[in-house]
Length: 237
Figure 1 (cartoon, rainbow, N blue to C red):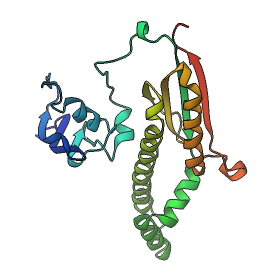
Figure 2 (figure 1 turned 90 degrees about the vertical axis):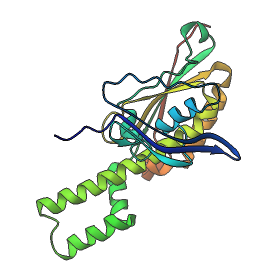
Figure 3 (figure 1 turned 45 degrees about the vertical axis):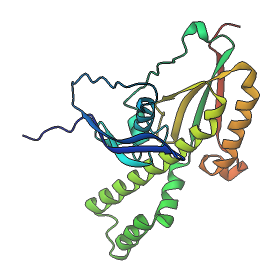
Figure 4 (figure 1 turned 180 degrees about the vertical axis):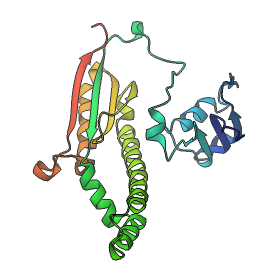
């Protein structure tokens, strides 16, 4: 009988900030159904390790697998299956003077796929080989090409999402990743911000929009990304 993979596997994790080593070679695993206490004094690297597991920050060395997925390469798929409640979570009594913004980012998936066929080295070579041998219509060839494209799309969208979060991280109090709707949406998130920093958040979103304008379904018409932003008050005035 095949032994199931542990739900968490960390191997020689390291994280450095310049000369400061926040995490020094942590290795551990957590089995399915196990209750695991991750304990240590302040500064031991507990939060840093968890943030690396969530791909909020990137490790300097080592590997992390969660639920059978690579924590960095498969971050987008992993975020749809796990959640994180930090110790300093903002409770309703602490939320006065804050607003929640919803941010949705879409891309032209079909156009991205065509770009991958032209520019992704492995996919381009395989697609050219299928065309040369007239194998495009065979089931196994289409299935293999589809897997390659799906993998490349997942990696590309995860990279975009990381960059978007990084661009907005400094202007928000907290963020929540929701499940994208449909195959054209790559990000469906909520951001909690201080009311007086609303203009800063808007400016940060505009910078992100300009950087990722090529992702939009509308980019062919007006060269601007389709970043739809809705707001709602989530605290007392």
